[in-house]
Image (cartoon, rainbow, N blue to C red; front, side):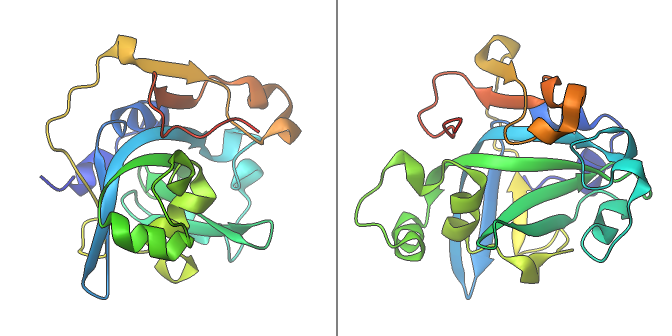
Length: 199
């Protein structure tokens, strides 16, 4: 069942980030379906989080979508090469977001291999937010895409993720955020080989 807008507009982004684990993320590009199980996420909490693009109420062309009502895609470029896929959460004006860091690929694997220019399935196919976007065909043209439509969406297929099956730690690559870099806002499925490796 496709997640409804009400899933995304809840006020606690940290809870949403955890609840996304075990859900299925899909894209449909030119009629080709690709997707898999979300196995790693990170929460970013609006204006008070030094690691968040909207910290101190920054509103730029890049961050404007963050202030929209939850349930839309926020895609931005890092290092000039990787598009990172985030899900905006909470109500309008709050600028909370969940970065999807990794999926376990299930659907359209041949297409993912083509997009990643890989000959065989290995964890680095979709383990990491940059390669995940390449595999799923997500780029900045999807900035603002509603996640209740048929281009990018998340489904609940009834996979139960017990609390003891979730690992928790600090987010990756946000050392500039001072004490906020230490917040335990990264979540992943314990023992899952598709989780990204910390660099």
